[in-house]
Amino acid sequence: MEIKRVVVTGLGALTPIGNTKDEYWDGLVSGKSGAAPITYFDTEKFKTTFACEVKNFDATQYIDRREARRMDKFAQYAMVAADEAIADAKLNLDQVDKLRVGVIWGAGIGGLETFQQEVLNFAGGDGTPRFNPFFIPKMIADIAPANISIKHGFMGPNYTTVSACASSANAIFDALNSIRLGYTDVVVTGGSEAAVTIAGMGGFNAMHALSTRNESPESASRPFDGARDGFVLGEGAGALILEEYEHAKARGAKIYAEVAGGGLSSDAYHMTAPHPEGLGVVEVMKNCLENAGLNPEDVDHINTHGTSTPLGDVAELKAISKVFGSHAKNININSTKSMTGHLLGAAGAIEAIASILSIEHGIVPPTINHTTVDENIDPELNLTLNKAQKRDVKVAMSNTFGFGGHNACVLFKKI
Image 1: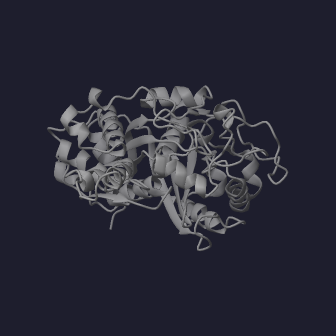
Image 2 (image 1 turned 120 degrees about the vertical axis):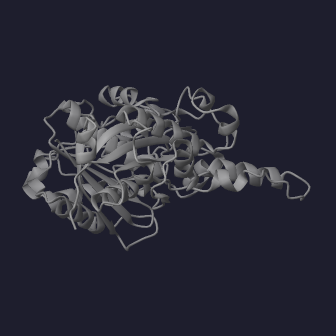
Image 3 (image 1 turned 180 degrees about the horizontal axis):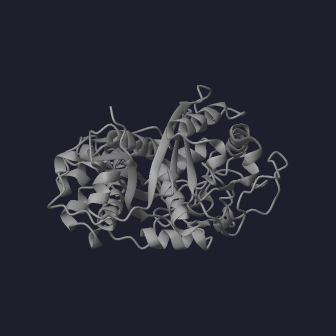
């Protein structure tokens, strides 16, 4: 079977530091922090009172008011990002074969706000089960790609990948394979999440996973810093149009980068903690390089999972050193979560977009908020601290890991 080449022809982003792809990139390069006090609910009794919210967003500016009311926020975010990516790709929807266009999406949680509100409404009532008829369709994680498909008439593969914070990187890898193997010509892929809710913040606080740096939220997400104390919850969506290379060439599409390959692995270690030596992470990066037919020394840039947790950051950097050896010190390593916070199931998508734009623009965004050296981190690694660095990025890797030990990795290269 012929293995087809796959390229990226469209991008869309809705993030805590920018509501379009271009705004997002500008925020990344300038080192903008998206963290601020939570506006969605009263946080007085919460351990953490801040998050990286999407700002100045009104769904009805993009989606019919009636339709918007039938969507959880995570699905609204998905629609907006996907529409931007489709427009960016300049897909002619009257000419494309919609039977060969798929939507493969990632979401780690899905409609958490909808679930929360319906349960609270029931708990505050007299015991009579008065639930919104759209409760289930709004909540289920697969509804985001379903809505994208319905709006545009895309009749190819349509589903959601759920692997916690690796979900949208999983989706991108699935989309890559769908096109590689000839099942589709185009796939709308990416991920969305909207977990900045009472339940989301309360649940992650109970796990001691979140930073509690309430006095200075803008500096709370500090991957690789010696004083890091947990991740900052974020929300939003990222969308990519993946397209078969010859299909893209035939219609004269702009090509951002080639999707060189991907990899998956499992830590098989712990429900929430990473393997301390990063063994699963070692395997996923090796798998990704092999799948792409590339060598470790080919990689110029790694956008790490880098959540700003004490254990996770060290384990990932140890794994990078094991896989890349002496070349590791030549790689621009960063964590854009220092600016966006952790978008859970959407993290892989927006970080893939950041990696692709680094290739296009020749700039690696910074890891902001670094002030304290961590003696457990190799000082020879270039963590792109506090300021963006110019770099001719020919190959960029994006790492994404999830609770349960799910590891996903995707590689992009200049074309």
